[in-house]
Amino acid sequence: MLEKYHDESEPGSRDASRAFVTGDYSEAGLVDDVSDLSFSEMLTLQNWLSFYEKNYVFVGRVIGRFYSEDGQPTPELTHVEAMITKGLEANKQEWKEKQKFPPCNTEWSAARGSRFWCSQHSGGVSRDWIGVPRKLYKPGAKEPHCVCVRTTGPPSEEMLDNPTHRNRGDLDHPGLQEYPGCPPLAITCFFPL
Image 1 (cartoon, rainbow, N blue to C red):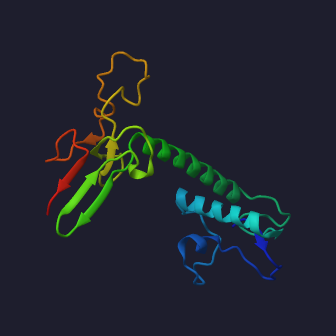
Image 2: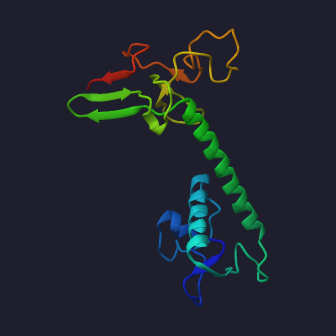
Image 3: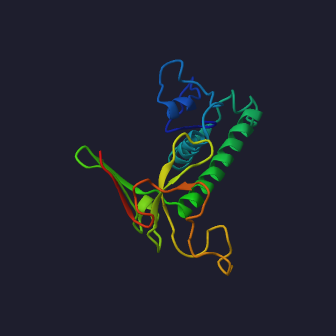
């Protein structure tokens, strides 16, 4: 994407960044138009570019969508860089949310049904609390997902030294809902078939 890195110079090269993300290596997919890619797909392209910067010799820029004939960045490149910046910001926000509400551990079997549970490492987030499973509803999401919720101390949004909190952790967050049939403070919930 955006620049050309090769072990050896190849005449007639073109920018086919889109194919790296989409996996479409047909003639229609081997293009430089990345305007409709998501933030996460843009970050995939950024990681790809970083890999090439570290492991290959820079031989020039491909004239076209991202660089003019004199090698100067185009407005399209500025747009892509802005999308990458927004993607990085979204990743930071997602990580912050994951620290507050780590995903539950889950398993399903045909014999027993579903099980959701929390541990000090569930969702790949190490912490000093276990939490309880809850449904988290996010604006714009079609379905809730299971998260582990801290049950003691002040809510995450309040200052730690605020004496008015009710010592319920994040249980009162408006986007959360208990799982029907699961005791409110159980760290494991079973849902038989």
